[in-house]
Length: 367
Image (cartoon, rainbow, N blue to C red; front, top):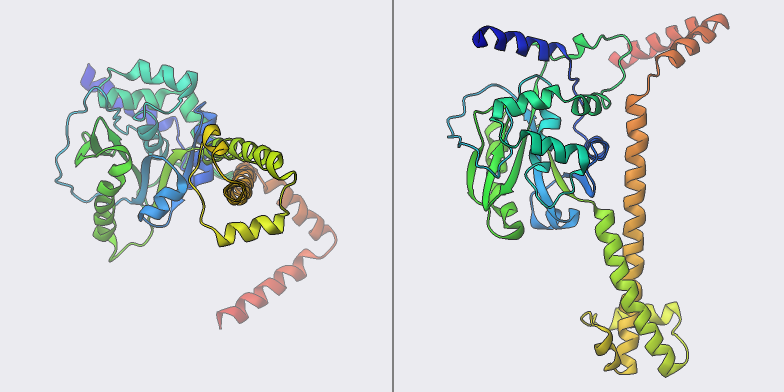
C-alpha cells in the first residue's frame, strides 16, 4: 500500500503548485521577513574575497544559484546529524525557499519567530524526505513563496510549473553547523560535508574553493550564476554601532565643553580628523585622562564616524525601500491597465498608426 500511495502523494504535491520566484536579494529578504524571521536580510555577492564578505556583515550562510543539468555527482553524502536540518526537495520550484530554510534552520543565533520555531521543532526528528513533505505541505511556506511570483494573468497556475524543455535553475546552500561545513542540496540523498568550518567566520575561507570549483565546472558553457549571502540585518548592526559612537561622542563633548568652554567648528573638526590618526575607542574613565588636544582629536574622529554611519543607515533604508517598491511591481497585475490603454488608443484612432510606426522601426532595426 505504501508503495502505491507514495507516487499518488507526490503527484498531489506537484499539482499543488509552487511557482518559480526570482533570484533577488529583495525578494529573499522580504520573504524571510514575511515568514516571521527577525534580524535577517540577503545580499548579492559579486566576489568571494574577504572585503566583500566583511562589507555585508556577519554571514549566516550562502545560497548559490546555477543552471541544473542533471549531471552525475559522485561526491559522498552523509547522514544528517541531530544538529543539521536537511530536507529533500519533493516538488519542483520550491528550491529557492528550501535553500533559504537550509540556512535559517541551521543557524541557532537567528530569531526564527513563532511559526518557524514551531516548524523546526515539529520536523526536528523527521528524516529528510518527510521534512521535505512537511515543507511542501506548509500553507505558510507555500503562500509566502507564491506571493513573489510575477503576475502572469494569461498563464494558469498549472502552466507556471517548469516544463521539460524549460531551462531549469537550482538553489543550494552552504552553512557551518557544529564545526563542520556543509553543502545542502535537496536533490541529493543527504548533506555533503566539505570539512572543518573553523572558528567564527573562518568557514567563509573554506567554502570559497568549493564554490569556485562548481563555477569552473560549468564556466566553459554557462555564465549565469548567482551567489547571495544570508546575513544579520545590516541596519540593526549600524544602529547598534551608531549608539556606541554617540555615547562616546556625547561624553567627549561634555569634557571638551568643561575644559574649553566651546566646541570647534565643523571645518576645524574636519582638519583635525584629516591631520591626526584616530585614537582607540575608550570608556568614560579613560576620557577623563585625555588632554584637551587628545579630546579634540577624538571628537573629530567620532564626529566623522557618526556622519558615515548615519549615511550608511540612510543608504540601507533606501535600499530596503527600493526592494519593497520592486516587490510591489513584481506582484502587480498590469494587464487591465494595458488593455484599457489600448482600447482608448483604438477608440481615438491612434492605435493603428502606432502599430505601423513600431513595425517600421523594427524593420529598420533589423537591417
